[in-house]
Length: 208
Image (tube, rainbow, N blue to C red; front, side):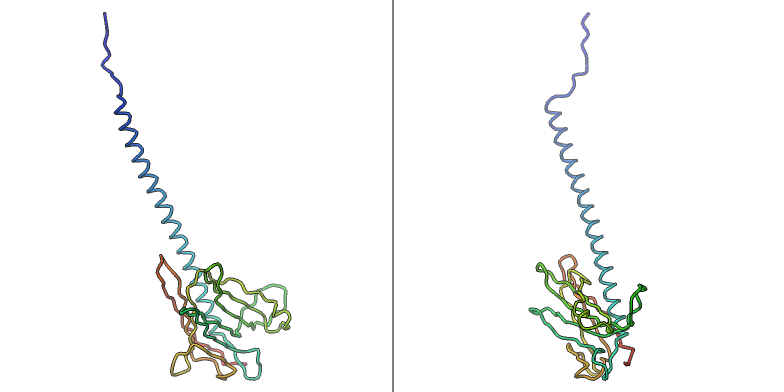
């Protein structure tokens, strides 16, 4: 007796079609997976940039609010210079301000000279910050290093209100007073588009 099996198996054409479909599905799955990873990385980078921006603006607001000036002490000053860089604002800010103690075993006066400046590095702009205690001697002060406060900055603009108008330059050696208010604007790029963030601060300490 001869028994014929009804299971003929798969043809070569059917295997090729199955492989093509599997490749299409795998490509779609991998594409979706990496798209999700890229979106997650962009969101994470954006959150970190916003956190850094918020911390920087809050620090600037607190330092300007605690700015000190005295006609009798040249170490206590507030200077803003307009350093326009090819159409992009690039202000420099130098001020004397009250700073909280670091809690380390060293001499601290609680009064610091702080300087902010925008520098270019590898075709990108970085907002740097330099801080020194005003009680330190000039040699130690000159050695104080500036460190990156915020990276990927498009522009940094500091404007001072004199009571009637906003100006881009200020020097207590010439104005003999602190500005009535200070507006700081930082421009960054988000998804290839420039976005500006501002903070307004009012000096509350008249001087020593």
